[in-house]
Image 1: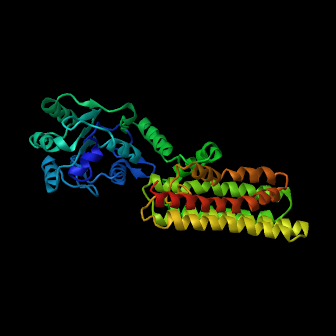
Image 2: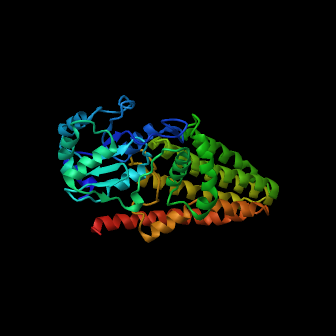
Image 3: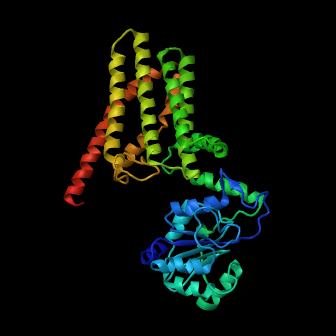
Length: 407
């Protein structure tokens, strides 16, 4: 049985925070990427589906969102419904949503328990018995808690190495925690150049923005402004102007990663933010292609580039509109609303189209702009965007046929 399965017996797992080892940082409750450690634990746990945060530390019992102040209060919460799985952790635990989610899938035998350092995991089957052991006397010390549990249930199972909890006690731990959280927001869907070039820069920017009041949506609008500012430079046939426009377009792409990073690091994800981010990218691309077409037409004195530009713009917006209507429109949850062009991203064609939709093409724009040849990119896009749109339609038809046939 897993803790998620255990939650079926009493709702989502319950988190109880007990005093951790005395911190040697400059602050007892250090700020990590814009949030205090005590805030981050609660926000991360709730984002991962954990039900309630209970502080047993006297100085944190009145913390926002805290319920209860002793083991009797915890027992009352458990008794209000069927007893949930229980996570007991020190207040120095780093709040990390992926860690909480991974922990929820960790299998623990029904009458067993697990521990790693001061972190204790109790499945729902023994929650009531464990709470009965802890109600009496001073049981806010993790060592006392573990000793009582050992005498009642035997030695705990060990957490897997990849579930080892991170605690923040020293000043060095603060830096390590920040680096860990920054790595955790890197998307698996990033293209090669995005992962190795853009993401290190955007993470460095986001690390500093976390300490400010700038919101993720404000960063999306900054990215939009940069992207739109880059487009007019492609009206020129000059390599210098085209290169400047391509570099601004690259800056737009880099900063476009900051909005999602800020949202995930500060738990400010929203559906509106995800939709705004999706359309900003596509609007910038469409305007850029339009300016490339106008610039090429002016330089050549021909109307053909305008037709090519129209094909690129319509293919781009057509594919975006269809993906929004089919994949994004019905998503009500906060967080990333666009992760794939498909509702079944593991299909071979979906994987190919997802790879083609990444923004690594911007580096080709930069390379061609150095020689004043962005028109070559427009030519590729004029054929590529409509073909991409057509393949998205084919993919949707195949998925619909598969659903209808029960495959």
